Amino acid sequence: MPRIEPLSPPYTPEEERRIAAPTTLPGAAPPPLAIFRTVARHPALQDAIKSLGRFYLVPEPGTSTTLSPREREIVIDRVCARCGCEYLWGVHVASFAGAVGFSPEQVAATAQGSAADPVWPERDRLLLRLVDELHDRAAVGDDLWRSLAAEWSETQLIELLILAGWYHASCYFANGVRLDCEPWAPRFPHG
Image (tube, rainbow, N blue to C red):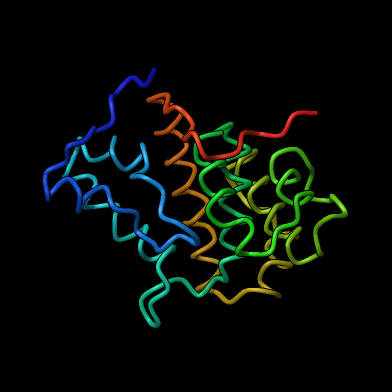
C-alpha cells in the first residue's frame, strides 16, 4: 500500500497534463504511471523536475541529452537495481530494454550481475562501474574516470553523473512512498 496515494481518475485536464509521461514510449502507451500520479500531489515540485525528465527522455536536437538511449538505460536500470527500486527498474525495462537492444541476459545482469559480467561489451561495463562506484562510494576513482573520459565527452560525463544522481533520487522517492509495481512491468529476476 503506497504511503501517499497516487491521483486516481477521473483526472482534471490540468492533472492529465501533469501525469503524462515525458516521453513517447515504444509500443502502446501505458496508463499514467503511479510515480507521476504521486508527484502530481506536489505541482510546484513536479514542474521543477519535469524539464529534467524531458532532457533525458525526449529526443530534441540541441535541448536533450547527447547520450544514446542505450547508455541512458544502462545507467538508469543499474541505479534502480542497486537502490532496490523494483518499481522504476520494471518500468524502464518494460518501456526501453527491447528498444535499446538489451538481451534477456543483459536485462538480468543490470539487476544481478557485476560490471565484469561477460554479457556486456567493455564500453557498457564502464557505465556499470560508474554506477557501482557512485552507489558504493558517492565518488568516482581516478582510474575509472580516465577510462570514462576516453569514451565520453566532458558534457556527456556531466550528463552521466546527473542522470545517475537523478535516478538515485527518483528511487528514494519511489521506495520511500512504497509505490506498488506497475502490473505490466517485470519484477527483479530471482536466482
